[in-house]
Structure formats: structure tokens, C-alpha cells
Image (cartoon, rainbow, N blue to C red; front, side):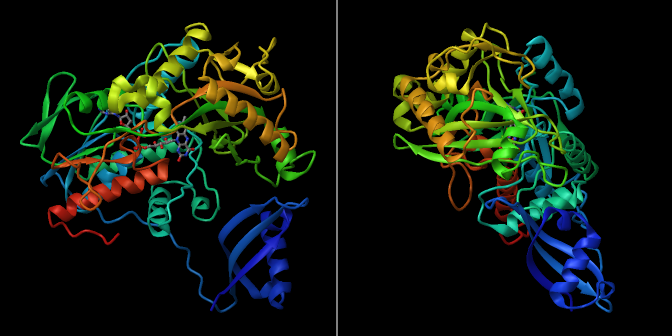
Length: 525
Ligand code: FAD
């Protein structure tokens, strides 16, 4: 029987198979040659002490133990060409994993996506970065793979259901992601690897008889007697089915407006808003690893920080070690930031959203917009930032200490944000209460992470698409909209997920509920 062991070793031992075997042989009192194979089950970095250690959970196979590599296989998908059709709006993680699950259940997904496939999408990202042109259907948020395609691909989630998380991670590995994501405590894929995985998922959906329609924007939902009948797309075509998974993400403002106009019940939802801070990665490494140089054995250091300031949480969000700040606007006339990293996280800069939790009462000035008040609040800040930075995709920026002292920075160095920055006193971008919290919060961050509060750090504004400003409420059991039968609000846009993994889990959940309603052998969740 292989032996399971928990251990803490140096980065040198963790990175070298021979050293690790040698170390383990001493621990279990055998000669190194007796160890046939070591499987790493879990890996995390412990940087709490002066000397960084690696925590490992390993399974040791001695001579005579049978070791068999676990190669993950795709599920046995049936052909669904002639099966009952289900409309899935949105090809983000929620929509794509819903489609795969529908196929497993023997149902035919028709995935409708306003944006282009991952390849076509790249040209439009170039246009935002270089020419400041925002395509309202194809950008960092819209297009195949959804908002997470060109991201850091962080795959951690606060979901408590380990089984669901593992299933999604295993599916991602079966579709080509590295198996390290099953082992690392903070797995990530990287923006250079995600598109191919997403392409493979789409090809599988098509191969099984599902449909994937790109450059097809849903403009209306057909409803009769409070039951879904189908959708209308931008050229007026109707696509009919009485089950509809609506997985359009947190930036589909036209969908929220459509639902509001049609008096389909939605409600304002608090979200978080702030700035994206960029430090030199070497500075974050030296703070987190207590060293002058990280060396080659440790990965670029992440950080996670949270403080209570003025009765609200202020925290780091979607931190990208070795990453780049991306222009994530979805309409002309606004600017939005977020971040991505390549799989090696080898860029010279570290960026993170630093955001403050908002409350429904903050949206009061926009009360006339009803359920869309939070969305209008968000829009107003993005538009103000666009005006202040010169009406291009440049963003307002300020050095961190200058911000805490309300001083416009004179000379902002070039940052990873390709469209560029304009020096602006960021207090002009945000309402007074938010500026005050951010100022106090950065000062507090500097006290608990020495070196963090520095003018080497550049703040970019705003980080505003942290989660959906609207909830599309659904029944807790059937997952159908409270009012409309056959409508399944799904993923981040509906307010039921935050991040790639939880959106994928929610996509599967909605598909399973549809299967259950049609007596299609639901997997137990
Ligand atoms: P989305 O991914 O937003 O997908 C919705 C899809 O619906 C889009 O493709 C959109 O084009 C389509 N759509 C919208 N309206 C219509 C319409 N009317 N008709 C047809 N189609 C429509 N999360 C992480 O977990 N880890 C990360 O590292 C990470 N990094 C990120 C980096 C960036 C730059 C961004 C923008 C986001 C990042 N996120 C990350 C967040 C993550 O991408 C989202 O939480 C996740 O994608 C939500 O999934 P979803 O399927 O619910 O919605």
C-alpha cells in the first residue's frame, strides 16, 4: 500500500525529484532506491516565516506497490443532434459548462454568443489596446470563453463543495489544462493556455451535435403566459425552445435593461469598486518572501489583503502576479480595468484590484433607475474616468502615496496598461466616501505589508466590474426565475457566481435542474 505523508520542505527539495526521494527515504526509514514513485497530491507555499517552505501532501509508492498514472478522460458524451433543444445564452464558463452538462444529459444545447470565437476576438483586443476602439460585442468581457478567456485564469473559489470544484478542474485537465491545477493550492492556467482549452470545449459541443452561434446577440426573450418560448437575435431571427439558460455575465447591460423593460423581476445588488494597483513584481516578491531576490524556485509572489475601513471591507481582488492591466470597457465612452497573466506569470509587474464593498444605500443618487441603480452608479464612474483621462482608452492614474495625500502625480512612469495613463487626482473619479476609504485603506495596507505603500505603485481607475450590479432572482430549488417558467438565470451576471470555477459550477447546476425537470437522469449534486 502506498504511504500518504504530509511534509514541509525547502523549495529546492520540492523542485527536485531526486532530492525529494532522498528526503522522503529518511522520513520513512528506507533506502532511496526502495522508493518507486512519488505522487504529489497537494502543494502550497508557506511564506509566513522568514524562510519560505513548501507544504506537500505526497503518496509514496515503494517497490512492489502498484502505481498507475491517472489519465483523466472526457465523459462519454452522447450524440444529441436530434435531442430536445435548450437555449444557452452566453459562451462564458457558465454557458459552456452548462452546454457540456446538457449533452451529458442527452439534451441539445444551442449556445448563442454575441462575440467572436477566441481567434477573431484577438484582433478586437488589439484594437482596444492600440487604437482605443471598443467593439460592443467583442472585447475583454464579450466573446468565446467569456470574461475569463484573456485572464490570469485563477481557478480558486470560495465554494465549499469540493466535489463540484474538483469535477470542473478535472474536466479542464481532460480538455488540456496542466494537471498541476489539481495539486496546487492556488491553481491558475494563464491567458496563453485558456483559449485552446475553450476552443476544444466548443469543438466537443459541436461534434456531439450541439450548436454554437457566434456574433449573434440576443435582443429579446419571447415569453407567453409567463413561460419562455425562445429568443430573438439582432437580425430579427427567432430561435425557439422552452428552456433557456441566461448566462450573459456581469457586463451585459443591455440584457439587464431588456429584463427591466419587460418587467421581468430583477433587483439591484451590492458589488465592490475601486482601483487597480500595479507594483514591480520584485517588490511584492521581497515583501512576501522576505528576500532581496526571489530566485528561480519560487513563483512570482501573489498577495491577498483585507482591512475593515470605515465599517466596510477594502480588499485585494483578482490579484495577478507577473501580469498586465487590461482595458476591459464594453462600450465606447467608458474605461474599466482588470488584469491578466500568462501561464508563467513572467511579466515584471504585479497588479491587483483594490476594492471597497458597496452598499445598496450608495446607489441612492440613482434611485430613479430602480433595479438598475447600481449599474448606473457603476456606469457613471466609468464614464467620468473616461472624461478625466482624455476620452480615449487611457485611464486616470496616480502614484499610491500621492493618492493618499491628494496630490496629482507629476510624472507617471509607463505601466503595463497598454493604452496609457493620464495623471489625475483619483479623488475626482470616486464619490467622497469611497475616496476617503481608499486613502485610509492604503495607509493601513502599508502598515501591515511593509513596503506596499509606495510611489513605485501606480493606481489605475476604475476597477468596477468585480461582480454583477444586478441579481436576476431564481427559485432556490428549481433554479427557474421566480416569475418566468423555463428561464434559468445563471452564472455571474445573474448574481450566482463570482469567478471562472463558480460560474462553471453554476452552469452545470442549471443544466442539471433542466435535466431533472425533463426526467433526464440527473447526476447527484
Ligand atoms: P461571462 O464570462 O461574462 O460570459 C458571459 C458571456 O455572455 C460573454 O461571452 C458575453 O459575450 C455573452 N453575452 C452577453 N450578452 C449577450 C447577449 N445579449 N447575447 C449573446 N451573448 C451575450 N475569474 C477567475 O476566476 N479567475 C481569474 O483569473 C479571472 N480573471 C479575470 C480577468 C479579466 C480581464 C476579466 C474581465 C475577468 C476575470 N475573471 C476571473 C472573472 C471571470 O472571468 C468571470 O467571473 C466569469 O467569466 C463569469 O462567467 P459567466 O459565464 O457567468 O459570464
